[in-house]
Length: 164
Image: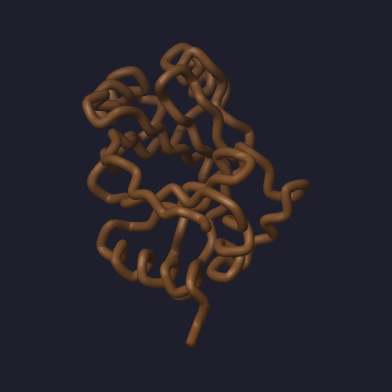
């Protein structure tokens, strides 16, 4: 039976570059010790870096990391950095048949050879905008704005048990 587990609060920085992409990527590589992903997400030490649009990224770390403040200094003049720590609520979906469970609520091809570990999709779950990441062979992370978190959990629980 698949499992739905809340992800503890994290420090999350939204990053939108607005300058020379070469300078931005060079500064980002120094800040993270790894290049920004060209698609999906990557781990850079204790920080997860996700590409959500051509010049937009999310950096996620432990709750005490204070990524937005650190990155605002590091990327000053190269990118706008916003604190999104209180904006997102996330859950880890894992276990047997998790792919079938998630496929009931998101219109994404979750086949293992299509949606691979490290892939990310900005999509819909019913009427909700969600971010879906494949984090392991049998695990996904689903994030939604905190204001509609209860609606997402309800939709996922309905899909888990089936509809009446």
